[in-house]
Image: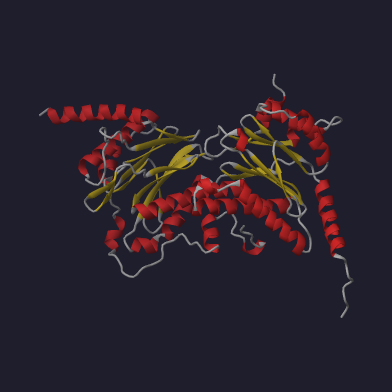
Length: 227
Length: 267
């Protein structure tokens, strides 16, 4: 019987992290930002049917970048967990923080125990009843949770996008304003993203029980070019 | 967090998910048995649904009874299932409310997991499976017999179904009624029904049918002006569910009562 070569744990973790990071960097990015009425999520997504952003619960949205089948699996697990909790207790008991913790546990476990880490970064956003209770949790491939206050960027080139957002984002923007800021941050200076390659959704405080709303392409085009 | 391997994934089925994690929503069989004759007769309610030009109207009274006591005056037996459909329930309040809650959740769960709503027929089928799942409890006397109605976006029309205790699903063309006062209510609707009615006329007819049912059936509640409790009446059209306000119903019942008063006094 052949013995496997000894690999130092540090090296093993580093290899896995590099692998996951490479996979994520290949994909297109998305940003999430607070605005006057809630949270807007803008993703660069050429597909009209394979979504990156979706609804988890009344006030909670999910967004993922990286490998589609992997973050979609996480999305469905999140919907199940939220619906089960709401059914067993009350709709008020479902919150983003506990969901983000579950995701972190799961991703952390997969990172250390499975053959291959998940090549994903996800975002769990919850719109509060007041604007100062909005929450965004950014969860990395290894289970690291980052609590973001005003805006978050996920995916390839996220560092540069985060820098651009820090310069242009301001408190109390309108939906049109915040989407414009998000699109500009995603595109950078040299590029322009056509409306067809964008996926935009909002968690809006005024939407009744289910705050999640996906902007149809026609509305999005009107929002980007008001004329 | 529930995570399944691809081969035993429950998909977008929420009741199945509940069973998988050991929370079976169905009431198990208990010892004892009820005569099958008693199965078909749900007590203490009247709910109706009828089609109009552009959608459906649903209506239900608010009374719940246990034996000869009024146990609840403000029960809502007509509830919104999702944006384009509603369900009305007759039968044992406990299992019925639980079933409606699970049904609403299942429609929302499916919509979120799949990214698209079930078709109206799919929703009716789903409810049928839930009623069938309740059969062991129905055999103990806890019968749940719903009406399901909604707007079919694919066919651009309102549609309605009624069910029996075994989950049998019957699509009706124009109107349907369930509960102990259903005989009176459905007669009123049958006589007053016209094809291509307006929403307004359909609401009036539904309100009148409940008035007549409450007049003849002790287990059906009429409009309660003293406490400001009116039946739940709602319409579902292309835009979605819209509940008729209590002020509007107070007006309509004022007119219905005046008309009934003239009939009684003129002899």
